[in-house]
Image 1: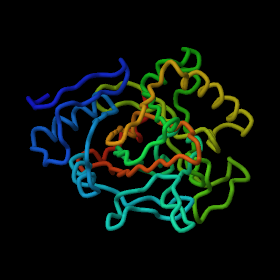
Image 2: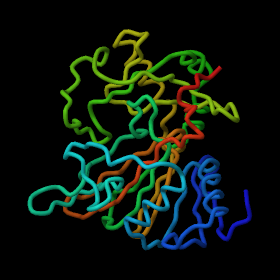
Image 3: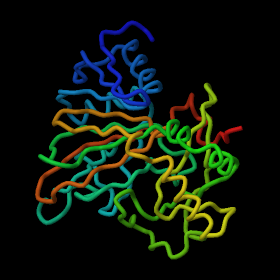
Image 4: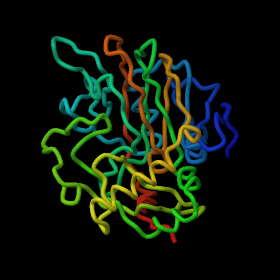
Length: 296
């Protein structure tokens, strides 16, 4: 990694690092930006504490990692920060009787973002503006560690299988605008991806699960698919494999969406939580998306 003026403190052996010594409200030099991209590739989740960022800062910082998508359509429509279509608002706050953001105060189940797309996003940045006194923590899980946690017989069973990722609901269980509730997971809309993928450089294997609700393995009956997916999730998504970030105002957290899953703990609905998020698309020089690489 190039010489830089920041520090890296890993938080677990499998993923996550706290970055120190950077004021992200100031422009980043090319060497620092390149080193942060490399750090994200290696640690999968980066945490920057005590930042004071505008939406313009958030867009600028995220842009060092790749092109930014517009805020997605949620259960409340396309909600973005004023003047910044790239900044997605996640909040339980209502103003003038209308929600200012998405996902409310409930639990957000384990998921990777928008895996129902042919090429899902590369990464996300999430900045804390208001946090509740309790709850609302965000958990992260390495999908390399999740694959490694599978018993060997289960690894052999999942090899070569594909999985359909539901496009009708989001991670909070809300129906996306324009969709009907799925009546049959075998025929409901979604995109099929390999269940096991391989890192294009290291060859390390990872699971590509997306999220559990409404997922389906097309080569199996619905009953057989449900049973196998339940077995995979029970083996791979275990508390001892996960790390949860306890939010403070001014925290910026970035994660690699290709190789991780994340979730949110619920929090009291009468406590305010307001986060601004950007979603980073796969850069042009990485368009051979590793999600499309079936593990050998």
